[in-house]
Length: 182
Picture 1 (tube, rainbow, N blue to C red):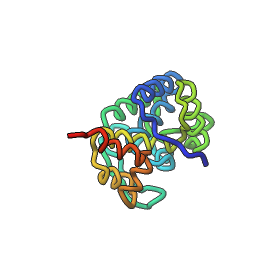
Picture 2: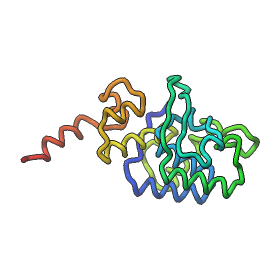
Picture 3: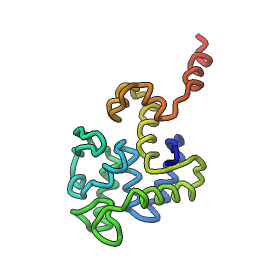
Picture 4: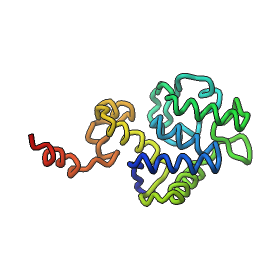
């Protein structure tokens, strides 16, 4: 399995959102919901339309940990879900349904969607399905959310695991000391 990075640039996130929206509303929703929820791809792909449509929160049992996860949907997610339902007419069934039937797309298909989209918009870093979760955590950290809160959201065992996960290196932490100079 390839090691992937978060998408660190908001400009690149916006470009990828625009590209995916132009390709397929399902793929756009996959990206938007993924980067705004921090869910693992296995949990994203299991979502049903009725679990998110006209809802304020998502409540699931995580496949990997078996723990309950309950969180509010952001306005960005709600708008993307509404647009998806309006375009597709789907109000039930798999949220990320395959075109060949009612089953969800596979992890491999989701990877291809994200990887190709990233390539098309000029993202050079390795991108995959886990990029969604990492991007959520990275941007939460960059916006000032305490690392222990992000750790809890991701169900990590320690803040150091979360920092390594989102790609915060020792050098980036050392730069705080070098740049402060009070």
